[in-house]
Length: 187
View 1: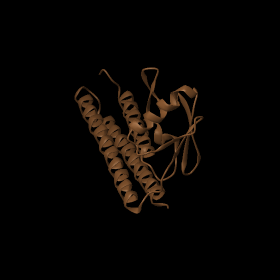
View 2: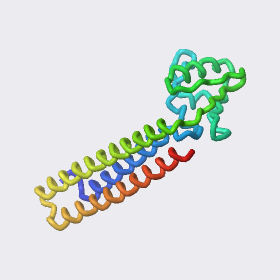
View 3: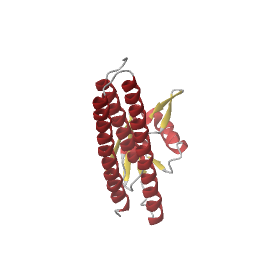
């Protein structure tokens, strides 16, 4: 056998951890009405001819619940940062005072909140599907290992461990969905 059952289970655990981290990242990108530096994480800035992430050319902070403050490390690129924010299609209108850029986050409408909750649920469901696919792949590898000489008891134990981990992840994702929904719907 090229891979032991322990290595297979460790690989499965790592894949579930990646799934969790991805879900958290996606949830953080869904705007809940409060300003967060992560909201401009995807903005690319033209820095002397090369596209660079905003966080590599400026300090990004959220001084209050409605404002994102961007302090460039070089004043010369403030207009490039402003252009990057506008070109990112995030729907933000940056205010440039010559020293720093401030973005005021408008409050969400009830209709938009409902759309965001739907997005959260879809993202959560997509993460569960990915996790179930990891389970399916792992169980197939266990069956293959069983054909190659793994005992039936070890195979059943491995499948039980895989299912238990999946069940724990689904509970965790469901809780993340509930928490994010509460965050979005809080006015």
